[in-house]
Image (cartoon, rainbow, N blue to C red; front, side, top):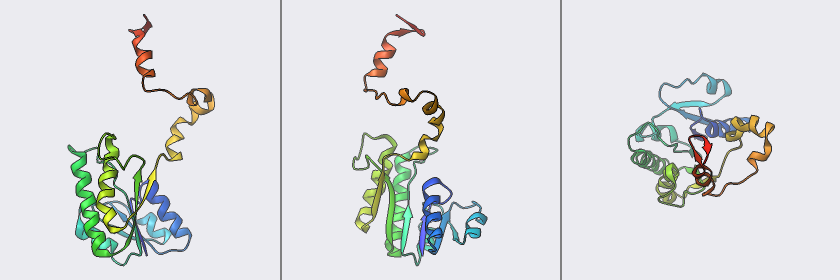
Length: 182
């Protein structure tokens, strides 16, 4: 049995669908109140758990060969890093008890403890799960993130191929006043 967190999202959903397509037994873990019909109709077991609820996570992870986890930034929190620490600690406690292998979605930049904005949340997750022998997928980008840009890519591809240096936006703004060149 494989357990997949975040199945209602892009990466968790892709992981769960791929495992099901391979004929694997899958339990998806959804937020409390999220619908289960889609996953049941695909042949998955469904559990509901809040990512900070160690007992619910422990029940969801029970019997798993491996668990896929992620720690998306909590943009609604007053303290995103405290929220990330709470989620990481809950995962670590529940996973230690389950004894399952762990694969965690992370990010390029997760090796840094500061200076990376919300990517620090993946650093926090890695620090909590590394002692468990977790494997980390440090994605740099997802192709689906480019979908909103397809019209621009189609209509003016040269714009996307011009890399910018950090000083370029500042230089272009320095020569403008009120929308006109100085």
